[in-house]
Length: 115
Image (cartoon, rainbow, N blue to C red; front, side, top):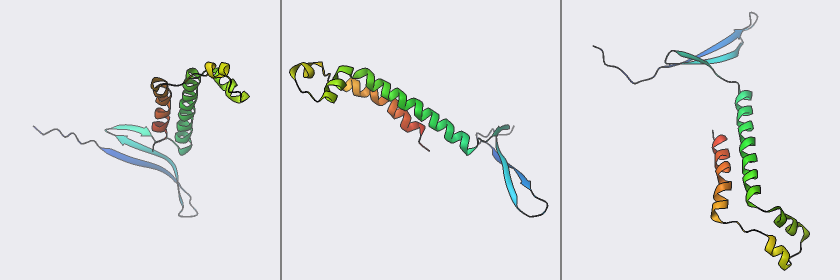
């Protein structure tokens, strides 16, 4: 009986194009084989596009969460610049649960753009 190994095998394969007139080699595609399964490596454009789309969605979620915890009347009162008692009563203060709710999508956005 042979002992089983938990080591995984990884191979990198580069499909290249070589011109007949020069010794220049151009990479066409990259593949990696992990434990006998072949995967095509995504292009840099595809990786950046996916990360930016995810970041955009997470930032939109963060802004939606912030908008939900603040009152539209508070923003109008601040834009008007009036500090009357009626305006102060319409302004809603944020508590710690509101801040935690708004930070969840932002934390996800930070993780989405991490290398």
